[in-house]
Length: 215
Image (cartoon, rainbow, N blue to C red; front, side, top):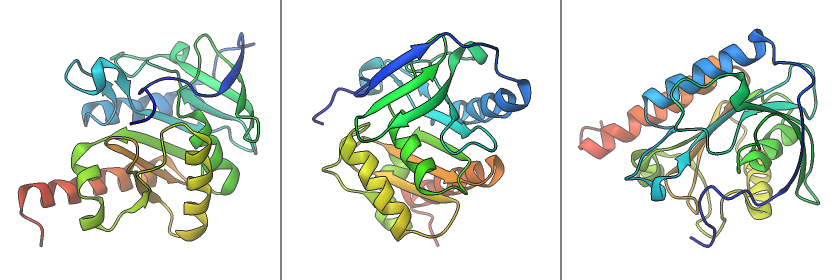
């Protein structure tokens, strides 16, 4: 791959948060993060990706066009994450590849991809990004949408590619694979349950293919 995994490729101005995130905003996000960690779609392992953390999750701030909350960069290995491991994205300049954020830690290196998804579909409120070899390797067989192998993670090209994908794929929730980002898979939708359910369904379908038990 052209880029080093986990490296933030955008400019970020990080301000100290004025207040702690409310439980009704942070609580469901942290709960779904825990679910994805149990499924090993989010995490950190010496055997994977040179030991770097992988996967992230975000949700739109209700009623906001631009603001969303996302897990901080390289926090996927933390078992019991708290609000201090979340970052509020206040605004994104997709043209300049610049992010204004508030939090104790910098936001995920995939922040601009999440931002592009929210910007291009006002009905999207959740984005889950995991790493799963089975889903990634069986994307074509399971009929998942894909972003091309020439598109690197966290890049302006990735942001543009997902915007095009949202226009071409009208079903929601949507699960898609990033062929240029090893094992990368995204799910996006209107609510946490349907978005998480779509990711789990994609995993189950891929595992059937991987074990040769698909019908």
